[in-house]
Length: 345
Image (tube, rainbow, N blue to C red; front, side, top):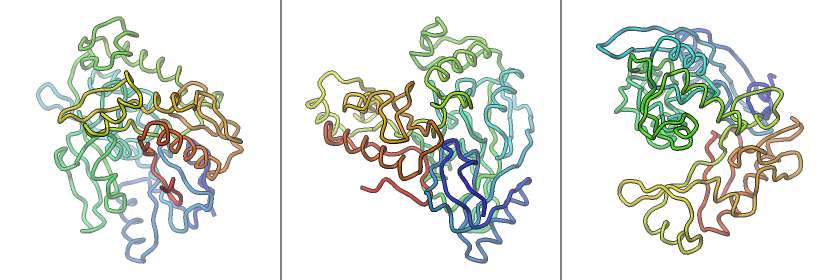
């Protein structure tokens, strides 16, 4: 049996009954299709940076995606960049910055593989991959065919997609991004980043400057993987920022007058989960046994000494979720994918 903890950034997770590695898209499809024919439960494993695996592990076949390769073509003023699912995401961002391909520079330092980016609709500092994804090639386990889904078919939403809503259906094989051929970043959309860069929201800066600024901000929050930094032994942001209906937002305003919020179309309101957590009594560094909230970033739950279990982590997550719900009437939702475990109600 192969232990799964070493394949996750949390360093948590029990054994896999069977384990295989796919080094080509064809091999990945073949492994998944054979498992499906034999009714073998299957977990497709990427970089493990957005994954919580239960202590009992996975009673089935775990397939680690190790496919590599990047192809480039030009479409007018756009660079069409197709990367295999097993490509390291930040390595792709490094190449984009070096080549003058603009549109993903603010996603510098995000851990994981290319294949996970459309699943989670990865986003940071005002950019989301949904802004640049042109096409996702995937294996459809329902029809048993390889399909090419255009962006409009991917159902992108805040940290969501059709791939995430039905994890058992699609296996991402490759992603094509449409990037602007420009030495300048996309318009800076995040106020904190704009301040760091000394520009206004909407301004553009050289790609390398944008990347360096984002990496600096992420390091300050323990969000760039570093073996020497125990705060990076996490799954990144553990909770998503709640999106509230007008009625829910009004109720929260009564409980927490003047709280930070972002107005969204249709009267919806997004609230920073980090603010809710801190003001519910869970500051940076708050510990429960061998797990704790990051000392740098309230949204990250960490396994700092590598001595915790998944049960320890989930106990802290439930405590935080329930504390926020009791104080503010808002229920936080986990961002990482849960395998063999859950937060429950």
